[in-house]
Amino acid sequence: MVRGLLREAETLGGRDGAIASDLLGNVASVVTGHDLGLVFISNTQYELIREPRTILKPDVSFIANDRLPDEVWAGIVPIAPDLAVEVASPSNRQADILDKVALYLAGGTRLDWLVRPEHQSVSAFRTDRPERIFTIRDELDGEDVLPGFRLPLERLFHRRGRRGT
Image (cartoon, rainbow, N blue to C red; front, side):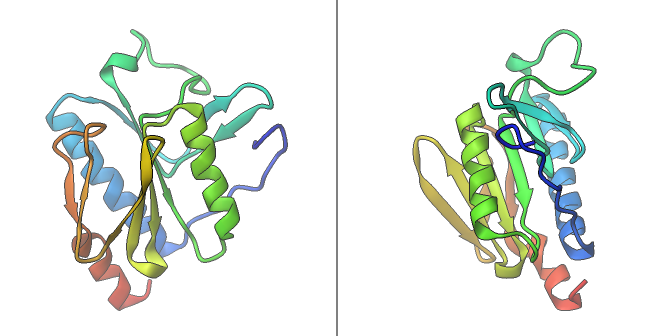
């Protein structure tokens, strides 16, 4: 639901699903290893804006310990994740993808990664600085949101690009 209107959710193909899965595993490894908080899968719903109601489901997300309640929410998470990851599919429209990024940031997400498998790149968005683009030759950094996270993008994209899955 975006701005009070139902939107059909995009689904990931094989290549993009594998990339999202690898990112989930890498993020979870750092979060668990450093006891930073909780990592959530793609079906987790976040109510980012109450009026007009906006609920999004990032492909991977993370909430830091200092923002977690004693008991994790049973339903829709009423706060924005600290990290939201969206993996763009070929069927996604650029305007829709960037609208999602803006909604995450407006809702309180501190860091948003937009993964573009077609371009073998990741864009990092924050409210306090311009977009940063990481290419296959770069290492993605979790910054102060996910301290200790570093992932060479060649590891993320290389196997998937050759097979075309």
